[in-house]
Structure formats: C-alpha cells, structure tokens
Image (tube, rainbow, N blue to C red; front, side):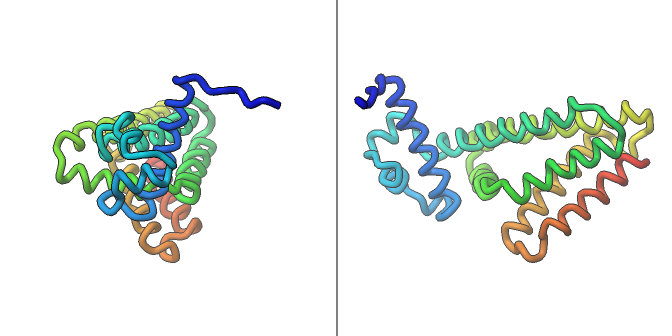
Length: 202
C-alpha cells in the first residue's frame, strides 16, 4: 500500500513534535544548560536549522514543554473542582490527583530547570510565572468549592492555603526527585491527607 505523503504543514508539525520530544528527553537526562541545540536537533534527527525554524532558542522550547505539561495537569485539576460531592469524596479525589502527579509525572525536573532559569532571566521569569499563577488560581477554586460545600470557615485566608498546598506539593516532589526512598507514595499520601484534613475539617 502506497504511503500517503504529508503536506508541508503536516511535516512542519511533525518536526515540531519530534524536536519537543527530543528536548524533553535531553533536558530531563542532562539538564537545560548541558544540552545544546545540536544535541536536540541530532536526537530528533534534524539539523540545527530545523531547530531555529521552530524556536528562537532553548528557553522558548522549554516554555512550550511547560505549557503542554501545565495544560494537561490543569485539565485534570479542573475535573476535581467541577465534580461536587461530600467533603471526604472531594478530599479523596484531591489526594488521588496529587498522588498520581507524584508517581506518574516525569516532567518535574523541567519545572526545576525553569525555576533556576527564571532566577537569572527576568523575561523568562515573567512568562513562567503565568503558569504558577494559573495553578494557584485552580487550587484556590478547589478550596473555595470545598468551603462553600461545607459552609465552614477556613483556618487561613484562601490565598495562604492555596500557596501552602502548592508549596507543599512542590517541596515533596523535589524531595522525591532527590531521594525517592525518603518520600515514597505512602509518605506522600500521609502528608497530603494530613494537610487537607486540617483544611477541610476546620
């Protein structure tokens, strides 16, 4: 059977996807600084020119990887917020969501790389912070939904609770990345359950 030829737009999209996948693999394995444009192009099977026809540089490519990762997590998190239920059901869904993020999310090193780059590059930091603010907004929405469902006062302001939950999760993921034995699934679930119980059972 004769293979259907790709259109120019399809070829460009395929090149983009291959470059993104190669970069994701290289950034996680070697880090942003140690990965060259040539490394990415070669791993994807293209030339340096193909890279620069799609991206201005590594920071732009990293932002695109983060955007895709963020959008996927955002959709899953939104499903938790929109699905109502009892306090215990909502807490269980939140714990399961964050547990999956810890155990199945292999892209966390990309976010660590982005934070380091943001400390040195104000323009990158500004663009990167959009993801952080959207994540905080989503967590605030979850806490607001639970609070309204229960009709109980919160132990702290909603902004403080959202920041606390996001920071807790980021911190545990960082510890897990550095020492998987220290923060296993059981430890992570215990810490999350304790935090959410303090918030929801006030």
